[in-house]
Length: 65
Image (cartoon, rainbow, N blue to C red):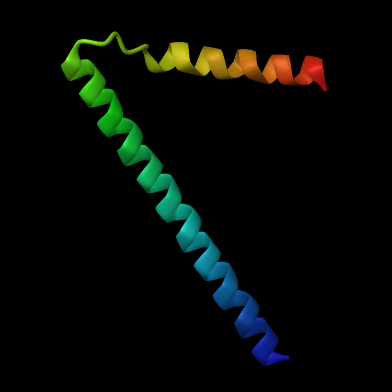
């Protein structure tokens, strides 16, 4: 029984580490991309505008489902 609990705990720990790495990598990639776009002179939308677009996509998904 202890081996099973240890196995589950180790698997869960590895999963959490992988998710955390993915989130951090995504944030770094998005930040770098936004900085480069701003440097190149491309108009970058404000974070509030991006959140509004995600809310609109959520509404559209609810309507279509």
